[in-house]
View 1 (cartoon, rainbow, N blue to C red):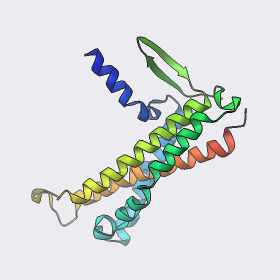
View 2 (cartoon, helix red, strand yellow):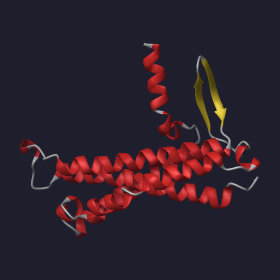
View 3 (cartoon, rainbow, N blue to C red):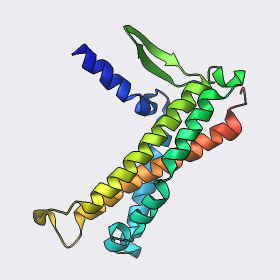
Length: 190
């Protein structure tokens, strides 16, 4: 059983960014994306029909075509961050988020992150998030809505679209935050 918990721990490390303990994380990870997704869904509900959003050639398909190229760029960013050779990147962050880490039988509780560790976790999560979003959109586009759930309001399609938009806005918000951190915050010791 312990072997499987170690394997599960290792396989979930790319999404460990979501488990960072820091108040700002809740805002960037969930509050902004949920607000933008709700706003987008309401606007799209009133200005378009569900086929223009979730149908063939619709907005979701177009956004998925854009996102499908992201994992390669994000993996390149991961490699660059991992090998970036400047001492400032290995310094502990100011007001650092903390995380619990397991290494073999050793468990570190509330371990503060260095800038490198934070960026690696962020870009790992962005890579997984973009891959998941593409898979979600592709699978969602081929799964038929069960006949017992078909309504004149297209509830299943709107739920599918809302979830897509939450993940899309999360991805976009965190990419913008990551770019801000790389462009401006990385070198500041404030």
